[in-house]
Length: 361
Picture 1: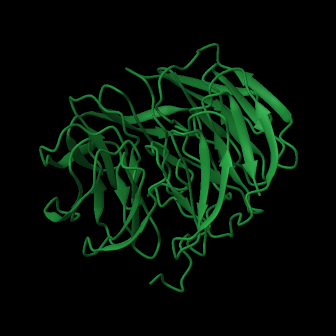
Picture 2: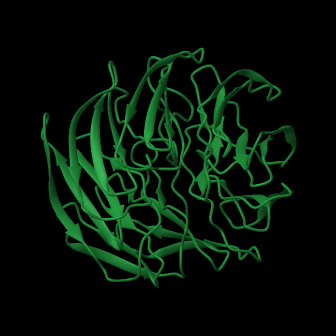
């Protein structure tokens, strides 16, 4: 059923950004945990809704809703350093930092994007018009960032200079994704919006609205250019790069951003407590996991061999074999809204609303 090829491809760190990479593949090129052993746990100063990322040396970067970024030692979870933004975060939206090729960390904090050195020293801060969502970069140089009021900007990472900004004119809860060839996608209100980066400026290429209730998630981008839109409605929607509909597939309301592997499998979790796996080319449902008896707001992630991981609103973290049998069920003690990450040595790092960060090996 599942391809022999790896689900993920290598990036400049094991997990540099939200959902691994600029396409939101949610897929690692390394093997994940199979036993569900807790390596370590840390309690932070607030709920842990933001998603973790991983540096080149294995350092885990994760912020709490209290507004403090922690650089955690991957061996035992102790702080290497912290940076206090002085801006507490509310709500359940999972927003991740971005680690660049040179080790610079870009941290969304309220209406600011903050650049930190690998040792936690402030490099620069740029203010935006509204809440900043997870930044994305295909090459580690040009960075795209969206805001809650629907703007999308390209940022020069050397000095934090904003190269261009496009206002989509709508409320957005999703982060941007990009194919690295100048096409950028964002979600807003009930729509999927495609933008073309033209260097020093950008334009909206097209806007697609299936009128299937609002969207509160990011888009997912397949290796063939198919782009997915999740909504609070009845279906998952897929579009061709030119904006024409590709397919739709039934599922219930989703707060979980879709991820698409390098082999073209799209994973979508929903409020029924199930994870649907669609062939991104055809929309055919290739597999289904669960139900777990609770809604799934966390996005899913997969390892190179298509082991599946996610958290539930029942406060548990799950691992599944590709054939649907359960690998583990770990009680974290608090609801999981955070988008998880996989480290280079095979740990699942996941946050929960009780303030815990847990590494499952």
